Image 1 (cartoon, rainbow, N blue to C red):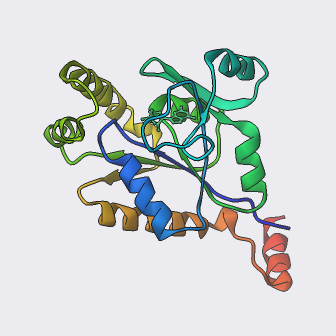
Image 2 (cartoon, rainbow, N blue to C red):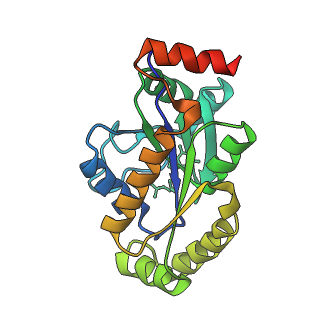
Length: 208
Ligand code: 5GP
């Protein structure tokens, strides 16, 4: 029997460095799978359909919502984002670990469903630093930076939804921390499936 893969849910307030962190994580663990969400937002420069997101129309998105195709979905900054149930189940059933980059609303939805996974929140070292990073990336006008900071504060107030907090001071260190979290989570006794049939039998005999 293949052991199911581990869903690793990662969120962060806008500007905390989640995208860069996940890119570094991808390089460090090339076999790690990343869930590709569906979205109604337009692709940014350098983004690819089917790689960064599945870019679909609002009509198609709402049709998928009606058909129950999303495990969770959310409206974020005016656009819809959703995680396709089928895509993630296919990956996890093959025993592959899977990173889901979700916003806090998505995590709230998964917690309500009592979804089993490891929930990691990436935090900035300070609000001042978060503002500096948002301004520094130059992708949002000033009024949107203020708005994102306000949303960020509300998200940080929901930190209790997560299992782990990673303060992102330095990308390399944060990647190492996330790798340690993943390694430890995979060693949890409730996920342990020994290769040795004899040991498996002995463990099972103790459970009954
Ligand atoms: P962006 O437009 O910058 O790529 O993403 C905006 C936010 O949407 C990020 O916080 C990202 O993690 C989140 N997001 C991406 N895909 C999904 C999804 O399928 N569900 C939810 N709830 N959030 C998502």
